[in-house]
Image: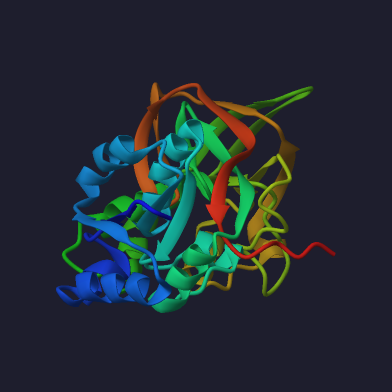
Length: 297
């Protein structure tokens, strides 16, 4: 690594914001101890896209932030052929955990210095990339309520869920997949980049990150009290797969239509209003990422 490695950090959210002024020194020390020269930029969330575009095409680009930040950067890096290095600076760090990337900055920097790479799938809806999942309905409403509160994400979760429940409604959606079509009524549709595990204790985890499929689920119940129970279980990470979700199936592509011209979609926790129809696709093994090698059974 002769030239400095660009390290772009979203300082606006997650653990990056919590570290405050100490963050810059922590990152610089972690990479110095790992023997890596870096070009560090601490950016606002709004400034990340332009910064990523400027360095896309470099052999290695390190992104610090949460799942939404990683998802936003993944498309440009995959297209340019850059390898993604990750600093775990989000609130939940779902992708980081599934890749087996260490949560401590010094350990993550040492992993990046090792150069160990693997390839993973990225998914898109109407051209917008997501690395984990996309959802329609209750969860985007919850995120919008939470973002409107002057509280940290964890503290805002419960009042945001209560507000989202008060305005929760069922969506009538038509799902078109190769060889089949379904009409559903649900408070939330969930589309995963690869297959999510629906078993107790592992909900929210994926069996693989490179199987080349989208997994589609809908919240099963339509009764209000049952939905309140689902929302509370989801908030504390204890959703019950058998009770809460109906698996619609795996598909290489998906088209979603509904009665409205636009639908709010949460992409890795970031909400965008997208024009209908929603066209979901998957790019198999499109992104190179620094991570421990996957252990296959």
